[in-house]
Picture: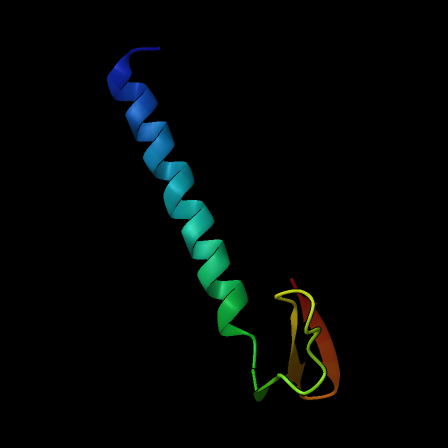
Amino acid sequence: MNKQQEQKIKLAFEKAIKYALDKHLSSWSIKTLDFVNASQETTDFYIARESEKLHIA
């Protein structure tokens, strides 16, 4: 495999990953950041999302 083929494959993977991530994130409906229940010892916080809380570190 030559450099040009490697670059094409790398670009294809980057585009596929970006598309999948964009599609995944667009399905989120973030309502509010919940800093009240955040840990003061760490930088952890929570995202309150409709009917569930997701822990984001």
